[in-house]
Figure: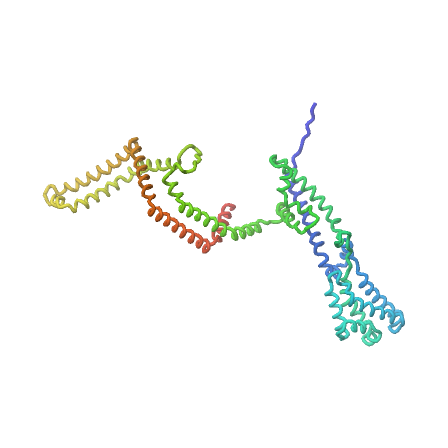
Amino acid sequence: MTTKLAITKPDKTQNRWLGKLIAIIALVNFCFVVFDLSYVSWRNFYLHHWTSITQIYDPIKGIEPHRETQNYLNKVDELETQVLQNGLQSSPVENLLQELRSLSNEMIEDNPFAVANKSGILEKIKNQIRDRVHINSSHKAFALFWSQEYLSQAGWQQELNFFNTKTRPLIQTNYYRNIGTNGKFIDNFWQIDLPFVIVFALDFLIRTFSISRRSPGLNWLKAMLRRWYDIFFLLPFLRWLRVIPVTLRLHQANLLNLELVRREINHDLVANFAEEITEIVGIRLIAQMQESIGRGDVIRWLLHPETRRPYIQVNNTDEVKAIATRLVNLSVYDVLPQIQPDIEALVHHTLKSTLNQSPVYQQLQNIPGLNQLPTQFTERLAKDLSQSTYSNLKKALEDPVVGELSSRLLKNFRDALEKELQKKHNLQEIQSLLVDMLEEIKINYVRGIAEGGVEKILEEADQLHQIIHH
């Protein structure tokens, strides 16, 4: 007994929710990527407003407090403690002030802020101290600020409070960033990014495998190329490019509508390139026609059909000949009978106008009993002429001899025309006129595009699309 395994097709609703879930995960991951890329430049903001964030994320970026600047701040804290315990004029306080003056000189000369590319912060610190003690020299300003005499006169509590509220936050922004064995700054963001990459990799493999199964003509590699934008999720570098697959995923999951953006992008691209492409194609086409006329290809093509390239027939019918024959038959058998009274009236009027100029006709009108004869004669003659012409046309169409004579007439006409066109002066004159005419068409064609542009055409296309969709 054979047991068959029942394979249940995935529910479309389930697929849609899975697509939305992956899109949301991709958006969360991209937010982490943006935060990581902007963390170093925005670290001062996080440090002042969300210190807990810097405490968590500094180790991931290999950031730690700079030893020199951190030691400087520790000495200030120790100074404040000693002043509270022993007073400003005590020996331990004087030793700490001496050490702070020395550390200040080292900070000014060594510039520990340069490693973090924060030399501007050091300039702000020096400006604050100079302005505070009203001395232009940075070294002398720090030496005065960290002296028992100045702190006693200005009030040590007030000055330390100034330092802690104005200068300390600037010094705290400085940091040291460790460098790895590869010579680059340590960056452990991959530890946060790795779970997302694993999810994206599994989703990518499943989707591409499903595409290759649904389309037997596609192998797995070609199916991967159809999802080329998802590859940006897997790259450990240039992570900002993930904005492309994230945007597309959100649009595919109906969480973000990019239709308007797509239309605007297409409109701008078409508006920028359509005019130039149209000009190039039109000018090139006309130029090729001019070159063909100059070489005599057009004359040979018209007068020597046997030299033309073989023409592919779809239904073994010469459509041009069939259409011409059909038009002639319609004109003779269907159209002419309907307008025959009008033809008779025209012929009658023409005959009457011609006979009125004849002296014999005028004399006949003056003879009693014969004055109506010319009128009856012209009416009868006009009717006979139109009917005989119509009958002859019908017979001509049905007479094979007429067809043979017409073919011979056409051949003789073509041979005579070719003979005359082969004369140098006639050929040169016609070719020159045709080339000049095409040159005028080319100039007016480009001018028309430049004046009218393609905006009007694009607007009409948009209106047609709206009509179709509504």
